Amino acid sequence: MKPLLLTVLSFIITLFPGGIKADTFNVIIYTGGNPPYTIIENGEISGIFKDLFAELETYTGHKFKLTPLPVARALKEFDFGGVDIEPGVNEKWRQHTQVKGLYSIPYEVSTEVLVFKPENRIQAQKPEDLYGKSIGIVRGYSYPRFDPAFSQGLIKKVENISEHNLLQQMVIDRLRHVFIGYRTILYYQKKNPQYRSFQIGDIVSQVEVKLRVHPNKSHLLPELNRALATMLEQGKIKAIYDKYR
Image (cartoon, rainbow, N blue to C red; front, side, top):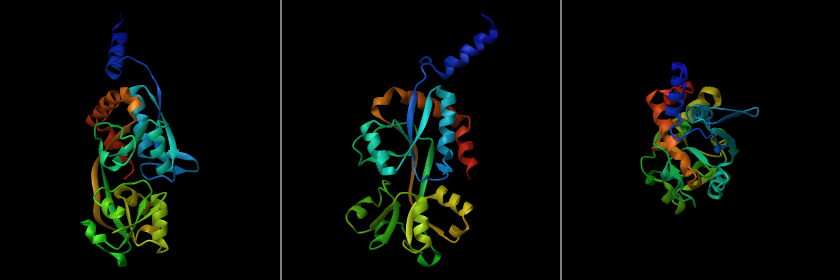
């Protein structure tokens, strides 16, 4: 056998140790977008998650179909097995779901912060700091440190379908405080001057994020873990995130 062919076969075996059997998997992305993770403009999808799964296709040989859904519906579709993978989540956020799912190795850290206008500055170091306040969050999102106070009505939870809608509500003073991803608020402030006066307060959540895989696709998990580990080692994931700073 020629040396070049041997090299190619060796490379293929390294990438696909279980053998080459390409499949297609449905991946949740949220309609309304949550930039820079998902950016939807003129019907075109871009952002961190699209780039991440494009790399995963290279490393696994599988195809990953991005499936836009509202957050609440996406969670139900996962329970029903209508979608296979939810990216960028942590087990603590999905404790309330019917199907808990299986989780990949962590590949990044998600930081969520309190955002407000300068005149509405408050602290959020502990739930008690927000008692009696109204806090805007994306419907379906979970904040384990604050969820008990939300459920008891000690903090009023005002839900909307996207981070962008929450920020719009702050512009017109329908909301004074929102929980939002740190990367997301920086993205919107960079793109939209009307948000640049908003201030970033305390961290309300900081956790490792992973891929949540439906149990009926458990055979995919080892492949994802191998691919993610290699991408982390080679700096591929850092490069994707840095692209959207």
